[in-house]
Amino acid sequence: MILDYLQTGGFLMIPIAAVTFMMWLCYFSTLASFREDRAPSNRHDLQFMAALVAAAPLLGLLGTVIGMMDTFHATASLVSAAPDAAALSDGIGKALVTTQAGLVSAIPGALALAHLRHIQKKRHA
Image (tube, rainbow, N blue to C red; front, top):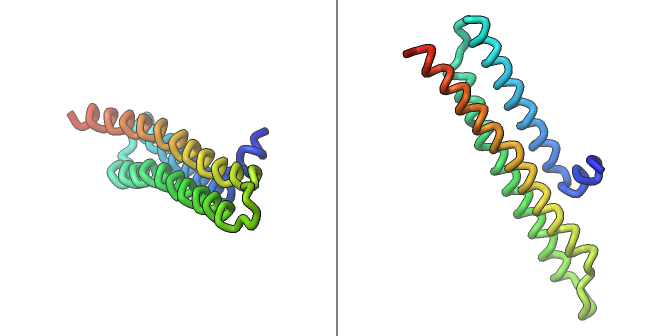
């Protein structure tokens, strides 16, 4: 079921997964440095994480555009009067799945980033 979901989203699911992995790796490493009372390069870590959080929905949006282009291509290349339902649903599915994956990655990432900024603010107060 998970493989079907990933295949529906197409090749953009790989960069979305990579961004999500890097985002959470950055979160947990920064959180660990806060807990160990080390002085990590917090500002750079938080800026990098913010960039990753911003990139996730943009990758999802790119997947939306590609999926809709696939859908329009399927409708434009029709020779007969009846549209091919499978070709239409593939493009729409790709558009929806990549949008969902980008948002599922970005929303918790934004909350995690806010958590780290809150900890940083408390430490410097």
